Length: 219
Image 1 (cartoon, rainbow, N blue to C red):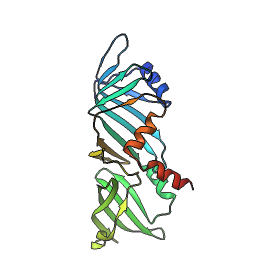
Image 2: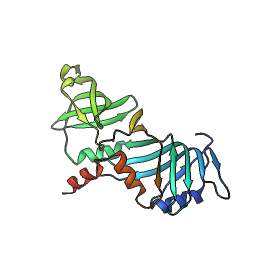
Image 3: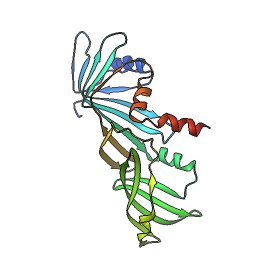
């Protein structure tokens, strides 16, 4: 989106409704006296805390975003996608809570699992990410145990620490980068009231297990 435009006034107006800072970008805007329809738009929310791994960023993409005036106002998204970005520091922080015998590295070629015993590295697994019944599964592609390729990798199976995704959200793209993992989900068109709690309602809709797990971890 090289020709993207942005307005601090619109960011502040929408952010006041959502009670969370947001940055809105678009290529074309329509509507008078104030624009209410944005084409090829995205909404960025940075530094989102969750009961699972914290997210570096959540980005809503849409072919068109339309704000419908009223009490309450509504937001309507056409061809929407949601992109979540996981950072290495947040992932390390989450895994460190459980003293697991491995570490996940977010690398440009994919996700790499480093196993260790008593603090000594003993294995390295290159994995692929799959979604099974809404859960994010890490399946081994290749492994090295003490420098020797091994079928032991077939015994390894782990999960990416993200809540279960609903059947409505379809994983459409995975982008790997050093220290970051971008997951994009395609969604059906939808409209929601622009009121406080909007993001919570969307989270429950697309990540229905998030609140149940949050309550369990709090006990």
